[in-house]
Image 1 (cartoon, rainbow, N blue to C red):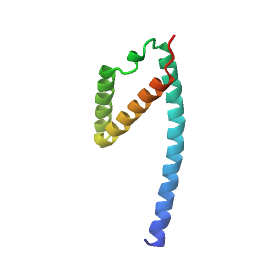
Image 2 (cartoon, rainbow, N blue to C red):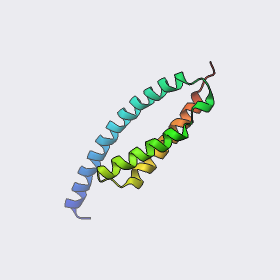
Image 3 (cartoon, helix red, strand yellow):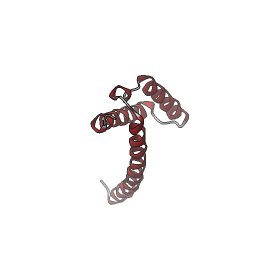
Length: 96
């Protein structure tokens, strides 16, 4: 790789790192909201809402297409995020 391309690559990676830092802050906020949602659930069976999951994925697909983002990328990200939070909720569920 030429020095010019290597420099450009490093600049792009720095931008990606900054974006990742922003995503971490967003994930922290999302986790706080998920904690609040979890505190309202009375039964462990309320953790997984398949209708809501389908609706979320449909909306993400529509927003991805509207914003010219490959919907396969966003679907995979959201499925992973949804199931990570389902796992989080199951691990942190406390019976009232």
